[in-house]
Image (cartoon, rainbow, N blue to C red):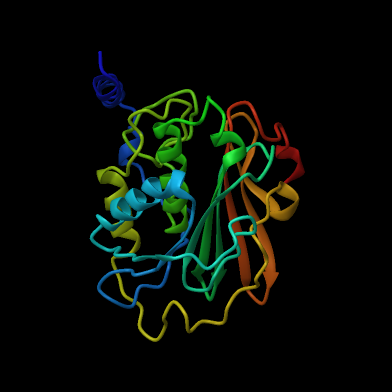
Amino acid sequence: MTVFSMKKKLLVASVLAGVAAPVIASHSWSNYHWARTTAELQVPVGDNVNSVWQSYLDTAVVDWNKSTVINSPLVAGSSNPKRCNAIEGTIQVCNERYGRTGWLGIASIWLSGGHISKGTTKVNDTYFNTAQYNTPAWRALVMYQEIGHDYGLGHQDEDFNTDLTESCMDYTNLPGGNEHPDAHDYEQLLAMYNHTESGATITSRAPASNAESGDTPADWGRAVHFTKDGRPDVFVQDLGNGNRKITHVFWAIGEGPRNVRHHR
């Protein structure tokens, strides 16, 4: 039986059992979104990746641009990959050996005036250079998911032990078949960006603090969301003046702090 047919059977069984399947649930990341003032959201994606990652970043931009409300250009990067500083009005994407941090990828967004003002995606070569993660499926899943978070998407499913969707916006330890956005991801983006906002542009709002995304929980602020096994995966840092930095973490299998819910 193919991966695709197995997933379809699981989804059908879920519906017949009267349980809502993950693909029909809303999965925006809270209410985080960019201000769209034109027909399509045109947030530039900064290219700070090496040749190993280039095809994955190229495909990620093409895939997310298949949404009817996103048309982001891929542009030359503006950040040192090791630091991966955020640049106002852009999503900067970086790869580097960030060390044994426990995470495969992180996405950080800065909120200013109620909207995303800038974002970063970092993928950790310390793990992707190992046999376990140096596969097209793992590279695609993490890269595409973190950029999806930078647009404001959340997860369709958050059980690492299941694989119930065809979407890259899925927590799973079985990445094969989850390399790209699916129809529900595009539907969710349309729901999030189905309006234009006058009197605001991506670059005219007061910029949020230049606090870096950082590589450890100590850099990310307060944990506000946890995986089913108790690992914190969303953090909020108050930057003052109504500005915040939100960081989403994709932990490697078996890594990351656990059972820390009582610290909230």
